[in-house]
Image (tube, rainbow, N blue to C red; front, side):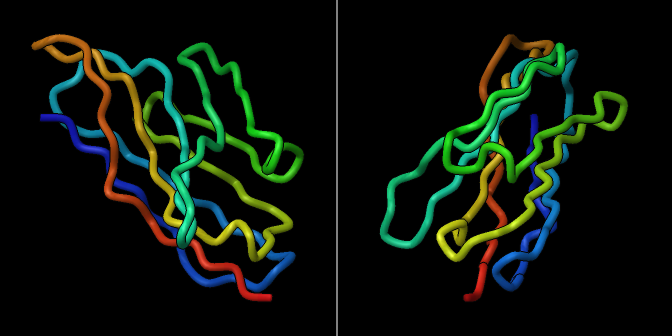
Length: 119
């Protein structure tokens, strides 16, 4: 079993900052690409950022230059540093990862953490 657990969400004022985390646990051999996505109220889920196992990062245009994705391979943890937050960033943020386990390779997703940005 592989589990992804997000944490660090909360309420912040516009212009503020927040860092959310995603911890991967369970029987795993290695972790490949890791991603953040989000789903705002009444909106479809959208991709936010990706970090590869080699540390290459990509961002959606809506968060580029404001958000920073990072990972700590020793801790099996991924982070999303969010700066200059806007009300439109309000969403449930989800992490997912491609994980190599003794049983094969699969993609796993967490339950999400709520981020609310007040104006």
